[in-house]
Structures are given as C-alpha cells and as structure tokens.
Image (cartoon, rainbow, N blue to C red; front, side):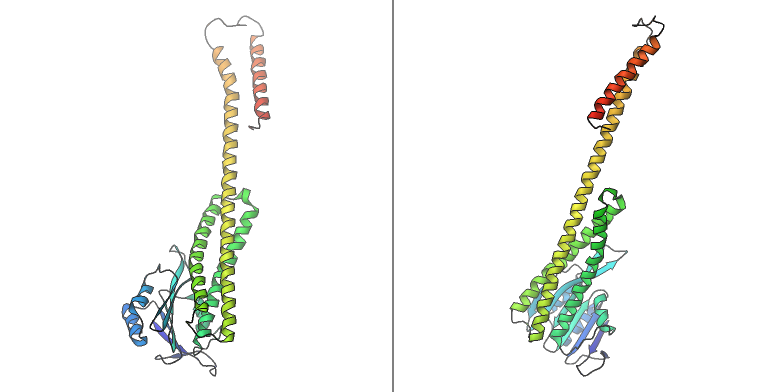
Length: 307
C-alpha cells in the first residue's frame, strides 16, 4: 500500500494526498512488485537499488545514484510466531521528496502518521533526522527492558533456572541483531555528515551530532548488556559445574563408605571357617569393626570436603 503525506510549516496537521508533489513524504508498506515499479518510474529511481528492499535480510548501508540518496536500515520488529528481531526499511531522499519502503508495518513511523510527533514533509533533511532519532529511541526502549531483566538475573546468578538461561540466550541473539543493525547505520551517518550529500543547516548539524552521539551510546549500551549476559552465562556454567562435581564427589564417597560393610558382610556370609567364628560376641565385634572403619573413612572424606 502506498500513501502520500504532505504538510508545510503553515499547515496544522499532516494530510493524506491522492498523488505525490513537491515536498511529499511517500510511505509504502508491503508493496507489490507492480507498486515498486510504479514508485521507481514516478520518482526516477535506480531499480537495482530499490529492489534490494525485497530481501528481508538486507543489511544497513548507504547508496547514492543520480543525486538520489538511498538509506537501508533495520528497525525493531518482534513477531511471536517468527524468529525475527529486526526488519528492513529503505529511506529514499530525492531533490523534492522523501520515500520510505518497508516490507512490514513500521511501528516507529506510526508516531508521525498518527500525529503524536509533528513533522513537516517539505523540510526533508529535518524529516529524515526525525525518523532516525525516533528509530534510535525505539532501539533504546528495547535495550531498557532487556537491561532490567539482565541485571535482575545478575543479582540471583546462583538461583538461575533452565528457562532463565533460555531467555538469556534469546536476549543474546536479540542484542547481536541490534548491534548488527545499529553499527553500520552509525557508520553511514558519520559518512553523511562528513560528505557533501545533503544540505545541513546549523540546526540540522546540531541534530545530526546529537543523533550520532545517541547511536554511539546505543551501541555501547548493547555491547555492555551483551557482555553482562556472557558473564552471567559463564558464572552460571561454572556454578553448575561445581555443583555437579560436588554431587559426584558425594556419591563417590557414599559408595566407598557403603562398600566397606558390604565387603565384610560378604566375607562372613561364606560357609568356611572365619576368624571369631566361635566367639560368643563375634557379631558385635564385627559390627564395631565395620562402624569404626566407616567412621574413619567418613572423617577422611569430611576433611577432604567431599560432602
């Protein structure tokens, strides 16, 4: 579906128009091949670049062709039935338009469409910066929830269960996806500010600097949480290994202790002449001998901290 939005500084709200014109923001969600071809023809785009958005695993990058800028990025997209953490989005900036194309719904753009955040489509550079700032905030919200859960796990590392480890593995996968999405994006943002690609006014320069700082902090935060998860997993693995070793040592010690009376009882169960066989207190003497040996062996294992 293709929708055209338009708003000038003088307009009170974002309007939907039937066709594109100068200063329009065109948003395409899950476009068909025919709709992509319409957009390519209408805005004179490079077909070989635009068609890359049909690849759901397209990586973030920046392209420039015939004066038109193409920004591939990824945004948070969580679906319960699918193992998906991010989805691709293409932002195209031409001389007189801004075009966004997404394979799925783009939640962070709904703030602009619904009017929760005001935008002026005729100011394309500022519109682009607003898109990127909102995307950064969306990733930051994802990290905030994960950070709280991970820090809770860190305080109870000795009580972590199997389901907690599964969640940590899932969070680690999610963080790797976020880092893979944000790092290349931050790289081409820096390239964008140092090159003569878009016209930046003084206010835009300050906004771009803030945006790059926010992206850098986002990357550092994601890597910090990822490191914490790895530390928790390593600590949990060490604790579980120690518990397993202690259990094996305890079982080994008990096996040795229980083997002593078993051997003595087996010997005295044979139908052959044995020491003390005719003694009236032979049973009690053998019992005292077994208890003494067992006590000495148990004391030995106690000193070795096997149980």
